[in-house]
Image (cartoon, rainbow, N blue to C red; front, side, top):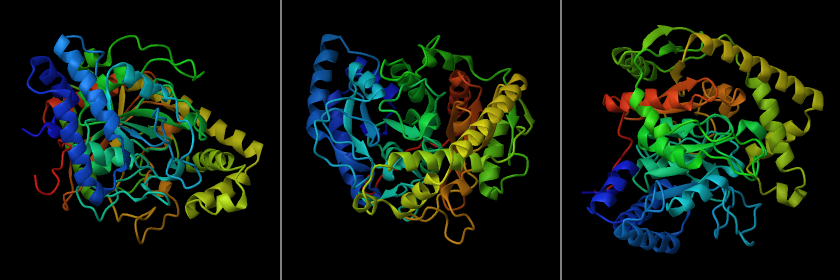
Length: 468
């Protein structure tokens, strides 16, 4: 049995039954991480010594019958935008010095540590998480598990590749415009952007309240488990929500029967979707109907908010780099340097006008969810394209937002949204379907995704590396 192929839930069951130990699991996960790294470049660094020490401590607790928490002994990876105590957080940038005490955990990392998780390492990100693919001047290109000539997506591409290839079943990603959902779709795993504030964030993102932190996992059950751990307030985040009213894991049992689902294949004709993507999503939508959901084709009432998103996103990038000297600025990814310059030209009135668009969009989606419990769309209109490019070659798009029109609107509205793997295209590349709910209804997103996994529709999300 390959322990690296098991979900977190199955690992915990095995620990309880004494079938295997956290040390065995961690050793296999580290070996898998070392093996995949030369081809896909999922990691900034592995924290092997700490991981094995944590696994031994976990093993002793399980032997005493005293696990520390909900994920004791489960290997976890952390995107290198989030603080992990004792290790540098370089944010994909040559502008961040490795020197420093690095003596603090980000809130979700602290929660995982309290619950006994084993930290395998930090995963790759584009510089400061600025774009929808994962490459940076610091760490190079992160590649797709299904085809290393293709991108893993981004900005949580390292986390997606690590989970897909068995280097830990749980990962923490961040999502400011699709950065959990895009790589989840491209790599064939599950990724959830929770309601803003459900998972506290510290330090605050330069991109403000667009940026969410959430689970990247093999399936929806693991994501619910992870959200039960990390979805609690932290005093360092003034915008964090109070504790959830119940367990997300328990909510999975309720299924989708009776839920009202709006299926929007193209956001009202605004998006051109590849035929293979459209077909896979249609099959998954039909499966939701077979499971008892009331499904009808319906589009949310909004036009593309990309200009407002750009104003907010580019201004955040400009603020992030405002104090950089000319020499330090030259170290940046050229694309990031370009959007920083654009953001610096925006006025306060431009920013407030973008906020007005955001408020109006949120109101429209609030009214939409009076009629529908869930909105379903493709996650992205295409499958993974060439690695090392921000947009597909030959595309008319200038920025990554040109090919991600289904994802960033729901960062503006702060709604929970997930990507579920629902098939592959003719080249064997994964296809993702997005499930969106009203703010604070993360449970509905997880319920629908879990029902699809239980029905056996999505991909497993696991691609064995060469030699297995």
